Length: 185
Image 1: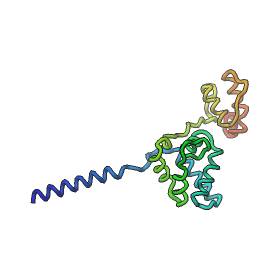
Image 2 (image 1 turned 30 degrees about the vertical axis):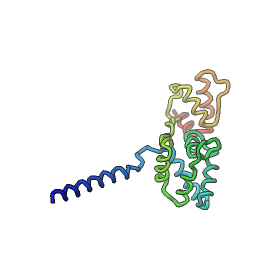
Image 3 (image 1 turned 90 degrees about the horizontal axis):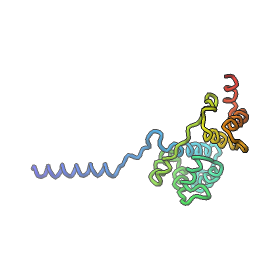
Image 4 (image 1 turned 45 degrees about the vertical axis):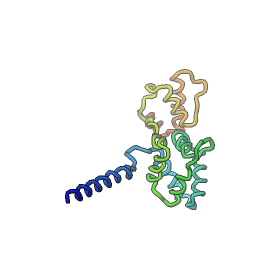
């Protein structure tokens, strides 16, 4: 009797250990896969708004088209999944197939994380609040980044004050609310 109980206890312990090893925690943690979740969420919503046929081929075509226009971290995400022309790998089908079946974006990102963990390492850069920031306290690198995000450059800018002048001149065009709040200060 004791021998039988020992075997049953051993068998149940082995089964419990096996379950723990086979079923890893797959859920994304808070703040993980930020770029993937945001980009694919907006992409999925745009497909719904455009009334696109939800087939893997049409989704893949739309994804490649969308990736042509993105910059920064989103462009890097597109590169990782193979939706850019210079990408070395092509795992676009890992997005288009599940999305055609309306699988939630977080589940798609979880699967992409298993395929390439770099995808979930991407995070957006912190945005500078132009309405309250003192431009004189920013580094030149950060000032250049603001201009780059606007698609502008500062040719002939040598000193920090040149970059600040360029940003304040362009602010009404690219950040009108920030320009208005700065003028009220």
